Amino acid sequence: MSGSILYIHGFNSAPASTKACQLVEVMARLGLSDQLQVPALHHHPRQAIGQLEQAITELGRPLLVGSSLGGYYATHLAERHGLKALLVNPAVSPHRMFDGYLGTQKNLYTDETWELTHDHVTALAELEVPAPWDPQRYQVWLQTGDETLDYRHAQQYYRACALRIQAGGDHSFQGFAQQLPALLSFAGIGADLYQAIDFTSL
Image (cartoon, rainbow, N blue to C red; front, side, top):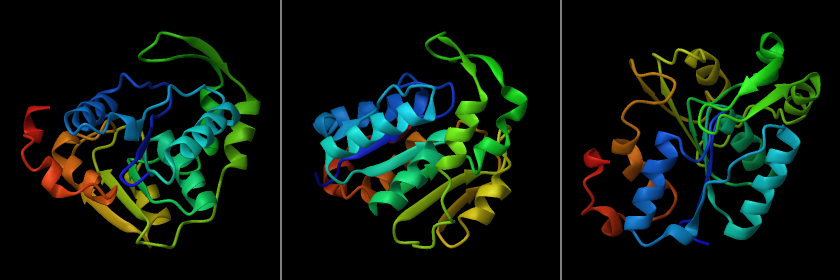
């Protein structure tokens, strides 16, 4: 489906996150809600990837938009299926960071509690792919003020791709709504459809 988008939220996040909601609102205004999926991902990577594979099948060849851990998932899936991906403050090798996080976790939006185990970490490691080299298929949006992930790891890993690095900001990516025209364009949605939208009001 031309112009379809699969939004992939991050660790302990949900479809209720700010960026996801802004994207949902814009696609609804454009009358394109059926071309967007924002699945509520299972906390275990193997089940999450299964959900995302199903969504890709339903959407055709969507643009993958991944935030944080979702950026890691998006990279794996983009490489597997030859899809385009737009990554927002993406996690690089997250399995190397999670050793200190083993144990009880709580989803920031749903209040669901769950156990982060060594099997989660192993499953994440299995998804690692070599650094992408095709700049036509990737956009990587980073903010240097990211308090959760060091943006330089992504800058290095995705160095062959189209990088957009903004000074300041934070892990949630400040000003995401104002950048949505670039996202829609990358998804193949014509500017004539969204030029009347005031993105600063989202």
